[in-house]
Image 1 (cartoon, one colour):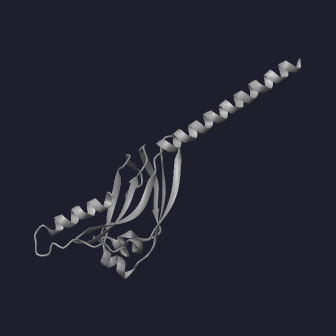
Image 2 (cartoon, one colour; image 1 turned 90 degrees about the vertical axis):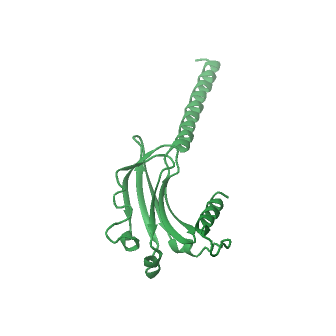
Length: 171
């Protein structure tokens, strides 16, 4: 073989390898931008008095089926209804993009036994499975003080507080 043929062959092989690497990187970028992203987090909403929530939400752009949802603490201890356990039947549920499942936590029960909670969530699409672990400390939300404008002795105070809370959430 001539030297020019070998050089041409090497250049062609390098071009093919670069193309394959670029295609793989593009595939990874598309997957990252379109995958489901299910997150568990705590929030407080203040409608005259604070309300505490644990939220499971799909922040991704693709829906996902939750195949495994484990909690290291018995959430029924924080429930407003002793007969119900929050998120107990979440496995095998489908969450569309931006869909959330919300659980209200009884602050009186929580304050008696404040406890960080670990959630282990496995979810996926037809092609890929994801597993994430979230450590939630509701106390960190309770420690955040939120003040309100005074509307004392007016029946619209709850509406006022609710609107203020909504504005704060969109800042």
